[in-house]
Image (tube, rainbow, N blue to C red):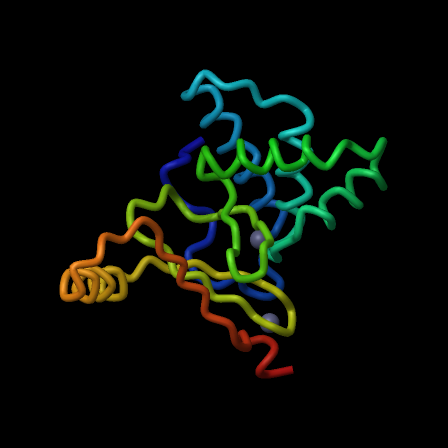
Length: 165
Ligand SMILES: [Zn+2]
Ligand SMILES: [Zn+2]
C-alpha cells in the first residue's frame, strides 16, 4: 500500500464518496506509521482511531468515550487522552483547538501548515495546505519580531453540500 498519497483528492470530503476506502486507508497508515516508529498499536489506540475514522467529523474526547462504552467497557478518561496524544504525536489525527475536538487525518503527511475547514452544519472537516497562507503568517510574524510556536487556522462555515440541500 502506498501511504505517501492521501486517500481523498478533493480537499473537502465529497458526499457519497467511498468512505470504507478512507477508513481502511486511515487504519493501514496507522499500522505502517507505528511500525516505522517502533510503537505498539495497542487495541485501545486502534479503537480510538477506528471511532474517529467512522466519519470526517470531529469528536470530543467525551464523545469518543461514550462510543467506546457502547462497544465494550468504558475506559478511564485518562486512557482515552493518552491514546489521543499518541495518535496526535504520529500525525494520524488532528485537534481542532477552537472546539477541543479531534478528527482522523486523511491527507498524506503534512509538511506545511494546515488550514482546517469546518462545516458548522454537518461538522465535516476539510484540510488544505496553502503555502500562500502559511507564508503570510511568516511575513507577519517577521514584521512583528514574533517567534511563532504554533498556528491554528480553523475556518468555520458551510460546506458545498449543506449550501445546496
Ligand atoms: Zn471518507
Ligand atoms: Zn456541511
